[in-house]
Image (cartoon, rainbow, N blue to C red; front, side, top):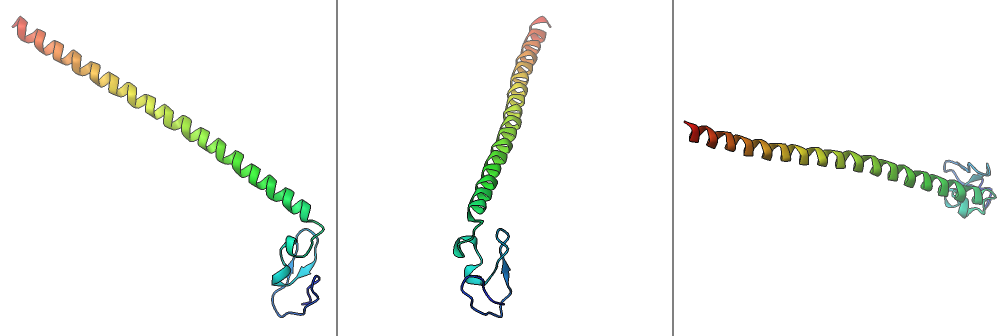
Length: 100
């Protein structure tokens, strides 16, 4: 295998650039290491992928935050109902004892 950039012959597995189609050695396999004509496209793709990941993470966080907040409200309501029930039971108990 002969590297299209440095012309060095190597027995390593060849690396084919997915942007320019060239064959490169392990030292020049990355687009920025062989002055790839598709380097700008590579940077744009990486930026778009990163942006998609950030948007996806933000949506997942928002969804989880809504679920957590909803559960938190449910727990608060259950706690409030439990306190009200305890108060009512004590009132019934004391009223029952005073009437008998």
